[in-house]
Amino acid sequence: MAASLTEDPTLSLEQRRRTLAAAGLFHPHPDAVGAELFVGDNAFFLAFDKVQVKYEMLRAHLADGAAVVDAASQHGYSRAAFYLVAEAFDEEGMLGLLDDKRGRHGPLKVTPEIDAYVRSAQQLSGAALSREVAERFGVVLHRRTLERLRRT
Image (tube, rainbow, N blue to C red):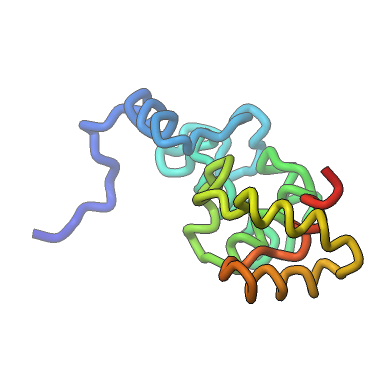
């Protein structure tokens, strides 16, 4: 049996809203989305679907030639947010349209021993310090992480 292009009547608009909200995919300002695709009673384009809005924002700029500031504002985003979305999309494709989880993404690598060493090595540049920490402790830390650690 061929798939139908009509919307599944068993999934109500309210169920779609709840599902998106539970997944963290609800656009924070759906009322700010004024792009023509999202206006009216279109059952496919939903202004509260954050991923869809981000995708259409990028498409409006890249495929339709809309200026960045116009594409962003029509989809409820700032110009700066547009560039963050575009960069994430370039790096990760569709997965880049999902928001990153906030907070630490892994175990804390800076042990008390590394902390003491970094604070005692004030004369080294961040890059040199990063190499030293990797060689001495077997832990790869970005130079900026180490520079911030020295300032605290």
